[in-house]
Image (cartoon, rainbow, N blue to C red):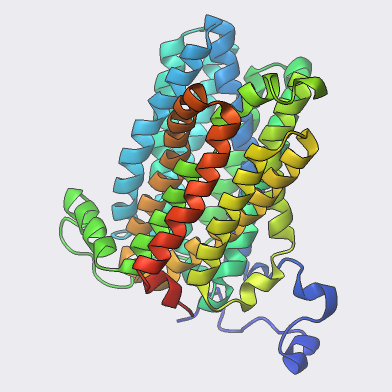
Amino acid sequence: MDTSESSTEPRTPKAEQEGGGPRGWRRFAMDTRPLRRPAYRRLWASTVVTAVGSQLTAVAVPKQIYDITGSSAWVGAASLAGLLPLIVFALWGGAIADSMDRRRLLLLTNTGIAVTSLLFWVQAFVGLESVWTLMLLLALQQAFWGLNAPARSASIARLVPADELPAANALGSTVMQTGQIAGPLLAGALIPVIGLAELYLIDALALCVTVWAVYRLPALPPLTAAKAGSAGLRGVLEGFRYISGHAVLLLSFLADIVAMVLGMPRALFPQLASETYAPYGEGFALGLLFAAIPLGAVLGGLFSGTFSRARRHGWMVIGSVVVWGLAVAGFGLSGSLWLAVAFLALAGVADMVSMVFRGAILLSAATDEMRGRMQGVFTVVVAGGPRLADVLHGTAGSAFGPRTAVAGGGVLVVVVMLALAAAMPALRRYRV
């Protein structure tokens, strides 16, 4: 199957042809081969724009809700209001992505997200000051995102060859993590200058770039005829049955659940900043703690050249989850803010490795007619795991103290992941 827009393969640099790969420092630098493929390059370039734009809205919504209510409880309620639509529509969106042209689905959903961002701008511009309107728009936005994400991720395997999937995932993940750093910083700088409402407008304009990039993609219809009912509940249930019958896919999901639910300590960052790291300045410490993991992930992505040469993808997932757990445990034991940030950055590197190879496994181990559903479940796991972790760590932190809860969670990640790897060898044995 031709994975680009023409039958001509991109030329390989002479040094790579003769030496079997890049030499010197280039062996460790990010593998950019997927960007030579026009279709993937367009999809990735649109992600560069929207990774920052979406974070502007992610900052503006809770800020506006807090400005209206003066209550953090309402901010938390709004987050939950977006979770249920995301879960439902990500699962359904995965089934739809396996039954229709994924390019068409991406066009429809990206347009929907852009219109929602425009509605966010309208309500802020006219000074509506209605929390319920904001929550309704947030639920609508997350529903469109749930429909969009599985199709977007599943399309990658049709745009690049199998040996470039880890590199493509690293490129996409690095951009998204960079957006999580740059977006909030940019939002904080822009609100005093242009106002909160204009953040929504900038996001809507950025999404127009995404719609244009998707429009220029090749058609991505199903490779096999879709079964009747495959886009409904029956199709969703077929996806879960498919996972249960493929141990390596099941374990890739369990690995992320173990890492995130047991080992994501972000709910305890405010308490740690206020108590353990108060001598450094509470606000300064809190900002560093929240920035450390995405910063580590970006650094991991920039030096991800070795990913493309790894063949034991299962061991890469196991090893990265274990390193994540050890780094989180080290963070919990750290009395120094700078040591804590270093451990969190290491955790971010491990999380990047885990994301890259779990994504590659889902795209390579699943057949094309099931990839959308696998990505739908992946979206739910990625979105839901950290929220469950917030509840678990918040409760454990209150009962045992924040540092004990964090360190204990990190140790549990290591123990449970190694136990899973020992009990179920499918992930250990998986290679490409």
